[in-house]
Amino acid sequence: MGTMTKVILSLSGVRKSYITAEGPVEILKGADLNVSAGETVALTGESGSGKSTLLHLAGGLDRVDAGSVIMDGQDIGAFRDVQRANYRRTKVGLVFQQFNLIPSLSVAANISFHAKLADRYDPQWEKHLIAQLGLQDYIARYPEQLSGGQQQRVAIGRTLAARPLLILADEPTGNLDEATGDSVLDLMLTLAKTAGSALLFVTHSSKLANRLDRKVMLRGGRIAE
Ligand SMILES: Nc1ncnc2c1ncn2[C@@H]1O[C@H](COP(=O)(O)OP(=O)(O)OP(=O)(O)O)[C@@H](O)[C@H]1O
Ligand SMILES: [Mg+2]
Image 1 (tube, rainbow, N blue to C red):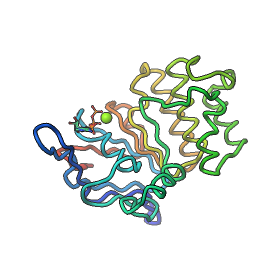
Image 2: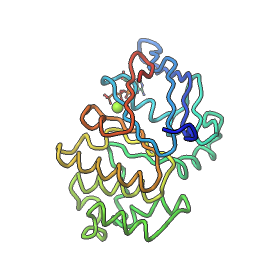
Image 3: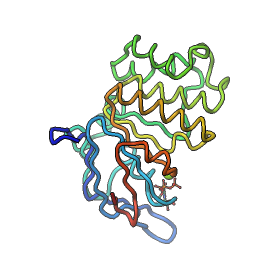
Image 4: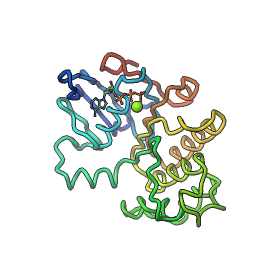
């Protein structure tokens, strides 16, 4: 990474507790992480270490207790609800294990949905994505008529169609067999690089993690390189 590389996501001193029956439990205890524009970062760590929690905070789905999440120069913790919704619509793309496709929309409509909301609908780019993701023969189908791997590719296409600054992916290949998971990751990496999107990718697989630009680990509520 050159010195000119712009940091697009910066978490500093992030703390987050959950209230449980036994009282509050602190999961993140001052986590620091920078992601540069276009950079692909693997986030690993034991089950329960707080990876999904961190992604939810970065994605504006939840709020930090202390510390800050700066995205593209803006402190998202200071956002009001409307700004937060706008942030989710325009700056970040989420790919989680649950695909959250819209059941009443065709594959084609699912893929263009976020791009249209973000006002970045580009039919050429979308056509390219559909071809690269091998979805040409499925565009008129509905999510329930697809296999898990096909649905996952639609979810990835939908996120990439909007060319977000940052893609937050939470074990998106966890439900797929190893070969399919590898090829889906390959596609995500290639397409994210083409779109110029940075990628923060949660995985338990060190083999997958090794294919990204950088690998960080959550341990004891903090990020270790
Ligand atoms: N809403 C909640 N209320 C209470 N505790 C929670 C809540 N969400 C998560 N936790 C707890 O916070 C800890 C971190 O959860 P998180 O889902 O971030 O872990 P993770 O690293 O993503 O784990 P995994 O690899 O299993 O997905 C866990 O101990 C979990 O039980
Ligand atoms: Mg998780």
